[in-house]
Each structure stands twice: as structure tokens, then as C-alpha cells.
Amino acid sequence: MTCIKCKKEFEFKSSIEYKCPECKGLLWFKPKLDSIKEKFPLKKIVNNIWDYKFAFPPISSGFHITRGEGGTPCLASKKFGRKLGIEYLYFKDESQNPTNSFKDRCAALLISHARSWDFKKVICASNGNQGASVAAYTSTEGIGCLNIIPEKIDVGKKAQMIAYNSDLKLVGDTVDDAIDFILKQKELTEYYQCTPELNPLTLEAEKTIAYEMISQIGKIDLVIIPMGSGQLLVSLWKGFNELKDANVISTIPKLVGVQSQVSSPIVNGFLEFKGYNPTNNETHNSLALGILVKKPIYKELAIRCIKESKGTVIAVPENLILSSIDELIRNEGIFAEPASALTFGAIRLLLQKNIFEDHEKIVCLITASGLKAPYVLEAISSQTKTTGKGSIIITKLKILSQISLSSIKGITGTRIKETMESISLAAIYQHLKELETRELISRIKEGKKVLYFITDSGKKVLDALDVLITLL
Image (cartoon, rainbow, N blue to C red):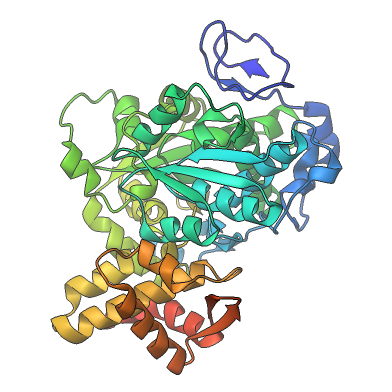
């Protein structure tokens, strides 16, 4: 491992460290440039992240856990690019990972490493996606999982954690509070650290997104990336920079970091803006909960990476989030969570600012599925004129989306109730009965438990949510 600040090197063999013990700079793994140059697969279909094991710190092949993460498509724009006169616009769709987010890459690598070090339990503080992914991967490996999450979290992500039998502890309002809680705990030696900001292996897993994009579409001019802690952007910069140093590519794409206007500490830092600062209440009202971070650990490094790539930043108004989600569905058939839709919303704003040329090859990163966030259901709620039937439809759709997120192992009515505190258990079971009658869900009895699963008809209902938004 190498300290980004003082450049000193340290062996990685006994514990997870994210800061240099001497200067407190952030640590990351030194790349194996010879291996990258020799083994990087150009124009090759990627099966999972282990196709890039030559670029990872060594983990014994007996511990390479996978559920098919990675190898997500980089889709050429169907309509939107043509509308704006952008000739080469692509969408890297990470929602097609096993638990519907880019964090499955991290879970595969981290849980593999935890097993190789013979850990029986892991701990993770996150805004949701990493916690949900880690819960899914530990459940298949028989490893205990403790997720530390803030109060403000997308309900679909919380539902996934519950469905995968993760233990949950709610701490504070934002992920900053959850991370602070972990850092203050002295007796965590029995837990493997899966908090993304506190484990540099996360950078290694996420850099495979950059590797894949180059394999899939070749030279890229600009990549638009959502930012919370700034770690994802740093990961992509690391991936592109390794490919450049290994002479696989000649230039690093310009990186554009995107945040919401009500929560934009990295954008403000890049622009050296010291003006208006939203209050906590205003910040918490952001739809983009997946990137709600008040004090990003990777802020300074993300700013450095953006500048070195000759990129820029942009803060997108909150009122563009829902319309961006709707427009992305209708034009490209991609259902993105609010934090991901910010990148789509940024395209027009960047075009107005002449940030890129029409002929440049641009990739918009979609990090996770809209099924993880209840924004669609809330949008339907706010637009529905009748409180009776409209609220019933919304409740049924919320239940259906939670069952969909637990489609591998199923979910009980009691587990659904834990994420829907405003409705009684009896009402939950009444809705389940009606959904089953309409063949949108099915059930299997295991001992005393009844597990519910979504059917193909149920999946079609969720796929049609964009139509509902348009009609209401």
C-alpha cells in the first residue's frame, strides 16, 4: 500500500488500514502495471470482476466469491443524445448488477478478502447501497453482517438489508454520523471492515468500472459521475490512470463530478465557493439520499483527480431530479435512483456551459436502480387526486418493490412491516393477499415462515412505473 500524501509504502497483511500511520494521508494499493499491460482484455466480454484479478491485491483463488457482478452494459443512447445533438452518448448501467447497484463489485472483493482472512463477521457504515450489497454477499457465505445506517436512507436499501438478515443499527441523520460511530469504537477487532471509506479495497473494486468502459467502447473523452464521499470518482480516476501508465490508453477522460445543489461540499470545494450553506433540514430534504454526505473523506483527493483529468464539477437543482428520472426512463429505458439521475440531469447543463464538444464520446454513469428509492411512489402520491384509492395503490407498489428487492431469498410479511412503520401488520398481510390473488407475487412456506416472491407479472408492473408517472 502507498500513502497518497507522503508516498511511503506499507505491507498489507495483518489489518485493514485506510490512513497512513505517519502523516495520516489516505492509503491505496500500488498498481501492477506490468500485469495490466500484459493481461488487460480489450474488446472482451467481461464475466465478473475477477476477470481483472491481475489488477487486484492477491487473494487466493479459493476465495473468489461472485454472484455475477460486473460486466454491466455501456449502452449507446437511443434517443436523448440525438435530441441534443450529441453524437456519442453512452450510459454505463450499473443497476444491472445482482442487487441493482455498483456496490456489488465492492461486496464481492471485500467479502472474498474477509473470508481469506477467516473473519466470521463484517461491519459496514453506509448510505445504503454498500450495506445492501454486503448483506447479500455475506448471506450466501454464512458470515454475520452488522450494518450501521443513518435515519435518512432510501427505504428500498433498508429493505434489502433486512431481507438478507443483516443486523441493523441506526445512528444519526447522515452517513457521516454512522462512520464517526464506527471510528469511535475500540472493540471491533472481530469484525472485518466493509465501510467503503475505511477500506481501500473498495477503490480496487470500483476501478473495474473504468476498465470495463475502455474494453467496451474504447477511447472516452468525458465521464459524468455522481459524488457523495468522492470515492467513486477517485476510483475511476485510479482505474483510468493505471491504464494510461500501462500504455493501454493514451489519455485520461475528463471527469465531471455531480452533486445536488442542496448538498454539494465537493463542488463548493472545487469552485472555492464560500457562500450559501443549506441548513440540516434543507440538506435532508434532498431526494438524492444515496450521496448525502456532509464531510466527504475523499473531498480533497476527488478535487485533485478532477483537476488532473482537466474535468469540472456541477451542482444540479433538486427540481430536476424527478424530471430527469422520468426522462431517462422514457428516452433510454433505464430506471435510475435519484443519485444516479443527477448525472443525466447534468447533461443539458453541461451542454449549455460548452463543457464538451458534440463529437466527443461521453459516458453517463448510472450507479443504481430506482427500485431502491421510493421516489416514484412518492411522485405518484403527490400527483394522485384521490386520497383513498391513490394511497392504496402506493402502499401496494411499495410492498411489491420490497418483495422485488428480496427476490433471491424471499421476504416475510414481518420483515416488510419493519420498513413500513406507518401501516399495521394486519394491513400488510391484506395487501399481500390481494397481490397474490392478482398473481403479482407468490409464496412458499418454510416451516412456520411464509416467504413471498415477485412473479413475472409483478416485475412487469414495476417496469411500467414510468407509464404511471407520465399518466398521473
